[in-house]
Image (tube, rainbow over all chains, first blue to last red; front, side, top):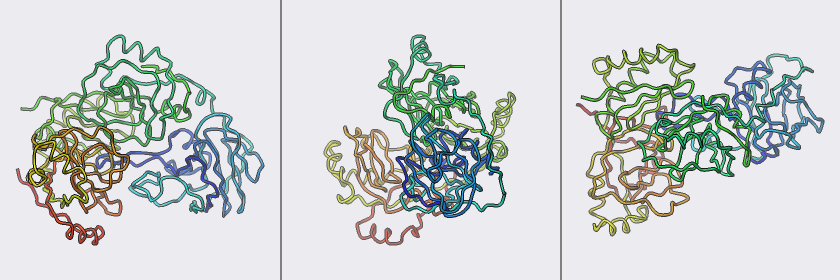
Length: 281
Length: 239
């Protein structure tokens, strides 16, 4: 079990998401950077659906109440076990009583904490991903006790570290496909969409990122239709919203672009003021 | 005759099927029937689906191959003969008392009706459930009579209570959980539109119908006291 000493700014439990419930209006959720969450599970030899802790902007302090192995992936917030720095993307042995904390942010926005067998909080609609209205809590709280999987496999603490390519954190290129309403865009609008260096506004969350720069919008409204994580909507004010993992299942704004799965993961590691360019395929 | 839907790839793993851009009960029935058929025939490859007024998203577990759209078109031709979807009429109790219906008087005044007339019109109609979106258990309903169409509030409330029954533009709906919202609140239902503890958290589905049944404060309190054990009245619909 893990005792949450300090939850940090925004920390949640996430797995691969809630599949099959969009018809009753339930968002998919799941780790924002699914690549990083998968990597932690792979290194720990966990099931791919095992739950991890997603920590946004660090600040989180966890005490382990049993022995386990852990693996930190995603953003680098200078993780430490009992004040001793540990490497990212590697398996670390943890003894009962040890404390995991974070320090300075070096790159990225979201870090993932995987443990042997995964976080075992209760499943709701076949998923442990926190979401308001579905799970009893939607962020970690001080004093919360998180059950974890039992230590079945003895892993070797590896000195080797898996290298994650830096463009995952530094690239401004966001690869995407044409969205269903792309065809309604004028030539000028398409050029703006492709050539503008957009910046992420302070209005960004697990639901979606609003961008600061605008594209003049002359579209008529459309009938509400399905949207996906990674859908880029053009709002009446000309602002673009990139929907992220907790996005609602339907929307009424034109869907001009659709991010690739990999691009969603790259965007998940960006925050307010960071730059991006859409690379339309 | 409905126009044939169109099929396009939407991102890596999703096929968007679009019908004519109309809000129509015939179209939503066609979508619902096709969705049921696809789910029964392709459940191994499909992860999820989303119904809209004139659209259906099919989200695949893996990127579908080039022949998938042709396979869906063939399946579409079989829909009407092979699928029988059971749809229900649900009677949802609503207390329109001023205690809950905080915008009822202002809305009635704006529509040049009495609050009683608003309640009567709102609860007389039978609404069609098009699909569920916005929030878990939020029903997109068709059938609000023109005389009750009323603009959304200029400034949305930060917190509309769970169960609030409201009118926004040409739509009416129920807030399944507390959320921000700009619609005019005319009442409240004591039942849960989304109950995570139940096997089917949302009782209604696309293609069902609902009717609002006015109740008083004491009945509201008595249903609330049953804490989710209250059964919503339902009737099977026949074509």
